[in-house]
Amino acid sequence: MKTNTIITIGRQYGSGGKEIGHFVAEAFGIKLYDKEMLARAAKESGICEELFETHDEKPTNSFLFFLAQFDAIKKIADEGPCVLVGRCADYALESYPNVVSIFIRADMEDRIRRVATRLDLTDAKAKDLINKTDKKRA
Image 1: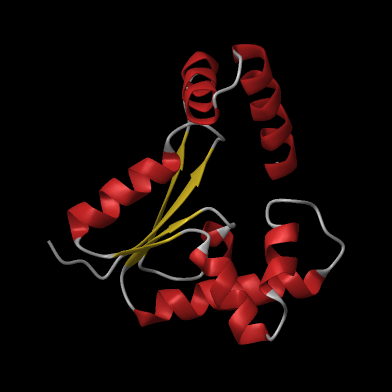
Image 2: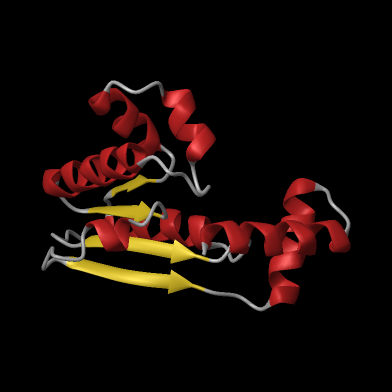
């Protein structure tokens, strides 16, 4: 199925949003972008990619990182239909008429189970990581 729609996926940590993004992209036969947006922003801005990775999902006083990432997201969206996971893509593309933005949530118990299994953590450590990550993303 072909579409001209850009799909943005925001998600709670451990909710499975990244996996859902892969499924949606595959179902529609379109590209998926996640951390690739950081590499693109680094390349196009001339800023070292490691700096983008260091500042990814962390508060920063540098408006430059924010603008470079938003610029890369807009350029990706201008190229055609795709799925964009995270990185505030919904905000970057809020003026685009062909954007569908979704937010993936899950019960805390399900998130703990997913994170604990994926990272081989105790439930307590997984819950702590989830809470810290959610706070950073907020």
